[in-house]
Amino acid sequence: MKSREIANTKKDATLPRTPVMIGGKSYDLCFDLGALSEAETELRRQGHDVNLLAALPTQNLANTRVIFAAAVRAFHPELGFEEAQKMLTIGDLYNVADAIFAAWSAAMPTPSEEKNGDPPQAAE
Image 1 (tube, rainbow, N blue to C red):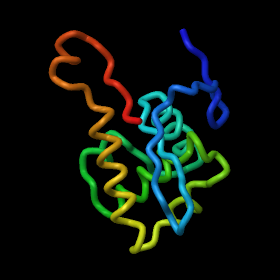
Image 2: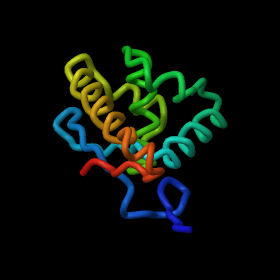
Image 3: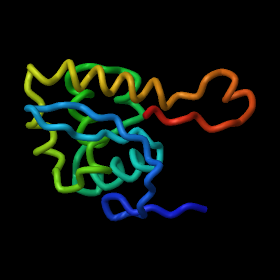
Image 4: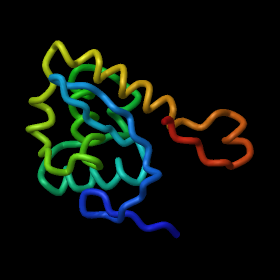
C-alpha cells in the first residue's frame, strides 16, 4: 500500500491537483477520496460542521466555501478553515465553483470503470 504525507499524512506525488486562481495567486485543490476524508475528519475535530458527502453533490454558496476549505487543505495545510473561507470573494467565487465542479466530475468513475472495478483517473 502506498504511503503519503500531505497535511500530516503521507506524501503521494500522484494526488490529483486542480489549480484555481484566487486574488492573482494559484492554489491547488485535491479531490482524492482519502485527502478529502482526512480534511473532513480534521475539520470536524476542530469543531467545524463539515459533511462533504452532503456538500459535494449540492453546489451552492455555503457548500462551495466548505468544499474549498477542505480541498485546499491537502496542498496548503497552512490555511485554516476560516482563513480559506474568507479568501473567497464574489469575484473569485464562480472561478472556484467551476474548478470544484470540474475536479469533482473528473474524480467520478465512468460507467465502464464502475463496471470493470477500475479506479477513476485523476484530472491533470
